[in-house]
Length: 610
Image (cartoon, rainbow, N blue to C red; front, side, top):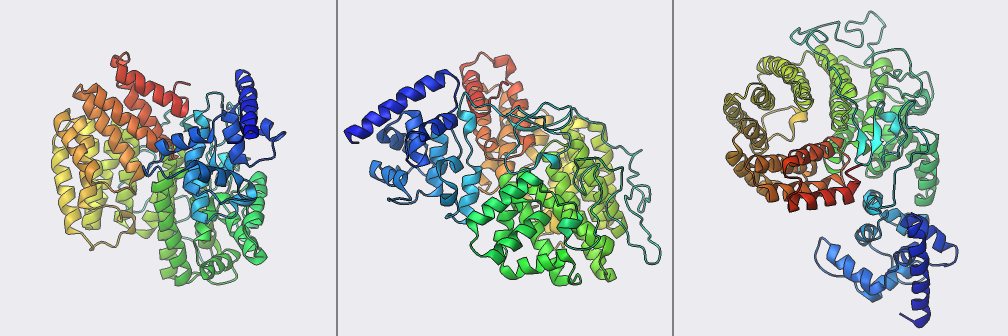
């Protein structure tokens, strides 16, 4: 570093210290320093922290998960000089530096620089947000998110309007007080065709199209197809216009146009991506759409404009998109998936209402509607929106009734049982579990019977402390093994004999057998792939509960600490809430050094104690 450069660093360090004393964030300090120093954002943040290049390189190499210690001072100067000179910093390096500088990776580069990265790298840059590490950073409280609800900063990547009744906390969207879920008096489970359950006419008359969405009184501020919102209707023109501008609000449209203008030189491609993004929920749909071949993008746009009839190739495309959404849900969580899934569900509803369909195409489209109800219900549950999840699952049940498909009925009852257990409503869970069991037997599908046996085992382990739960899991493993490659049920693509075993830990904990639960959790964690992000976090927390029951407090605190690493990069509010619940179990040992260290880590990660 030259003498002039060192004097500049000392001056910035002095100003930063004074501004930190006045509770300025590092983002704000970088903005102040930018008024006097015409350098790259990456260098501004180093100045804001008052650190030399050698300090930053050493800290970066300590944080690098690859452990390669590959950054050198000369290379850091190259990155800080780009794009005028030097070379472009890799997205992974920016993500690590964002953590070091307690900011977002997007703040470390300009908008023009961001546009030069590949879609996969841009996704990594979008997700690298470490502002919670800045002790002066607070979510915005300037405007209420919903009428009558304290205002909070929006969750990155999701429109707050898509989650009615949920507010933002330092951990993400807060769940409302446990609601009263529907019971058998609300949904007559065992009737093979219950018209009271269906949110649309089950037997339309001549020339009448069956609607897939209920039509409650319209509430302002809700998008078509949302709980309490109006159904999407098509009256001509593009579907985006027909559905009231889709899920993207005015702010989303502005941001979407800005991003596309900076990143897409081809005007025709830019306009098409803009139209499709509006149809599929705004900016969160962009990564999904960019990965589509150009022919598929054109086919999707033509379908949405209703300039072509619905055919098998169009449904193939919609089904592939749904499968991709499931993969993104596991990797990133529901926040980015839900807006896209809800918009897609509204599009399918519109096609069911108005498209001319053969009986075979209608059956297939109705099956896709069930799949999207399944996905949106699961995503809402993962965000602890119990009312929204119950509604989506109920609408999926209605679709399954029209399809007269017992496997689909069994699966959604099983998920309602799963959610009821999380709400600590064991009798409601038993109600749904036994309904699922009856429908699964009717289906004669081994894989669905395996999935249902898992939910019944969980329910009786919690509600009855019944050791038969373990025998049910053994049966589920056997059924899953026998059905390998022999089931046509796409919604059970994840269910293998090994995955069945992951539920054994939960049941062993409920049956007060921590020794066996610890052994099972260790075995399952060792065998689990890196792509099972949320599942790994849940299993780690169950492992921690078993360790607490076994009075292995240091190990339990360490395992909860490991799970928090997943929470910071995943939008599952259920996972974050489970971390809180696991930590509460350590309250009798709150003065233990390991528990105090865990509390400090949780507080640092997400202002845990707020």
